[in-house]
Image 1 (cartoon, rainbow, N blue to C red):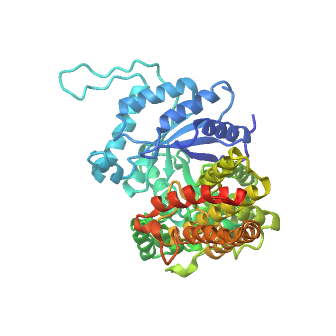
Image 2 (cartoon, rainbow, N blue to C red; image 1 turned 30 degrees about the horizontal axis):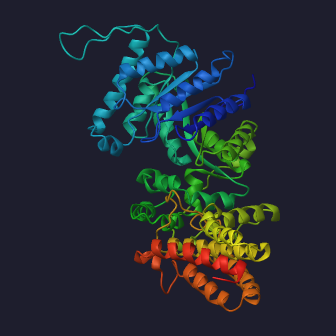
Length: 547
């Protein structure tokens, strides 16, 4: 079984297709990674269920040292007895290869669920949870929480050793990890200077408790986004909602240690709360992302992960993809291999330098102009993909069906002709595509389409296509439709001009000035008229020359 020269893990959220998560975990094991860490993310899906499925898929190979970690579960939402039962069941699946992280999560999430939270009490609760888990896993009884009732008697066999990590960043939790836990788990979006200070505090606490700091394992999620170039990765990161959110909740101490003013965070957070995600992304400078996450090529990500290891003392970096998708997993596994092969000299060069305090402005909007390393083929592929997205071809049935209906009626009447029918079909689809693009441009301007809109195209808001480029594609589509219209005018006469003008003006001004009738509650009736009677009657006339 392959094992990399240095331990490194993969962090995954309990989301997306379960089969994909299982396959990614197996590939991480086959690549030689140390572990996969699956974290709870309220209100998505359950990390323990995903972890159980992953553990089951790996159980057939007991000789593998690959570990499955829950990072982290919450004693506020899962009673320690339930956590003990969970650990016991998982340990039977993967004996000696289960890790459990404990954390209290965001107080905001607990309050949303009506669970009271007190910062001082939270430390004590995690501490008591560790004690109870150790007792239950050792087969010991616990006194009943209600007087007069029998004690809690574990009915599962004693487990193998399940390391308990504390997942938190507050000083009191770090000290608790040094005194009592088997490991410490750093949160996503932590900088090297801040993490270095946290781990120094962890070691000091361990020494005060008479423990050897080397016996406390340190792991940390490193938010990662890989692309062909560093510029492209940074641009893409600034358009991802999760990244924007993480930059909007950075702590004052973390910001100061990394060389930034909290005012920058506050401006990003204000735009986030206003749901102005484009502005929020534009406010994020490259330096902020470089300090708190890993962006760039697979080589860049490997070098920065090594910097966290060499300069902050992080023993087990956990590469956590911002975009949980096939290509990103492939790139991160390649980065993990490069990380394990990294030499000390490279790590020293990756040290994050001191930088002045930064206040960014919206003029730093990311574009593709700064990309110099993408080849023509890759640039063409990406641009073509963005054009395909803004054209929204999945919606073309709305124009194809009525035009085909007109052609079908012409066939029933015995007057069908292929050439004018195909010309009318092409012109209708081109008008529809141009309308879709203009619609997207103005929906983005109006703030209707944002990076969190689930059904919208994201080509413009995520910078894959500029507004000017989108306009050029729309005008090209309209121009081609006009050219076809001139042919049909020569074939059928000036009535085609009237039909074409109604379609062109109606499509363009669906969202564009001067009418913008979509925003005046007239969208549905006018779409019905344009794509119902107009297209059906118009295509019949184009095919037959009759009404």
